[in-house]
Length: 372
Image 1 (cartoon, helix red, strand yellow):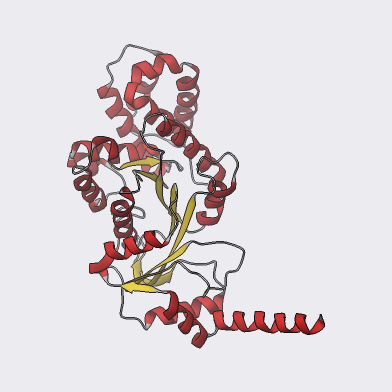
Image 2 (cartoon, helix red, strand yellow):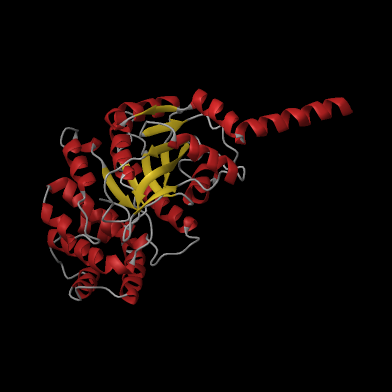
């Protein structure tokens, strides 16, 4: 028995050394990595998805402000559309995503100029062109399930409400009068948003029959806006899940097929929000979540001051991550991925379904932390 234990320990040490030692890592990576250049982006994304099991929720862990995120999102949208994935859940409030959807529907560029922060919004323009070739009930839409950032949503929130009030004739109902009072302010302070969301959330539900009829198509939008938390909180994943659960219920009653989602979230949410989605008994996508992390190698990142960075994964142990970065820097490819993560030595029991790599990718900095 003692000899068996020694043999097992020796084998374990050899496997660990293989995973984290540079020569061993290179051998392992060569066996498991798939690579290509920017002109093969869609083909690589197709290969990635084909290697993974079908899921209801594809959660991508990004580092913000990298141009690759927008390109990857659009490539995933096209790839996953044939699997009936039509919904993008966002690390943004729904008051902002509502304007996105209005642009996707109308093509009115002036809507994009109203959004804060200012950006090119080239991703949304590409999504609109893609949508025009799809049936109406299979078009991509964006849904905000995250916090309301007072710095920007003092603008985006009143713009969204004004659009809705222009489309819904007033009947001098209590919420008509209530919303008009806030819209007249032009910009919202923190306390305005708190009072607005609290009252909206309560009244829309307590008088749901009245307001579903009155606001019609926009009832769900208003309720989702009101469900978003106000202000950034480090540990907000349970609150994000509440907004997502509301969104899922809304879409389940409207979409012909089972609602499926793509979401790009900050890397830390892969475990926090991801594990709630994956394991919580109340999760409508329990056991059907794919988690993909992104590693950026020498890519231009940063919103205000951009620098070339090696950013992304923090779950991998330090020496293993260094070997990974060194290995990628030696490659001439721009895009790569792993769906077998045996080469990596993780700090915890965190499980990733895939790792996407962008290597010297992107030729400019982003103008917005999230969209450009």
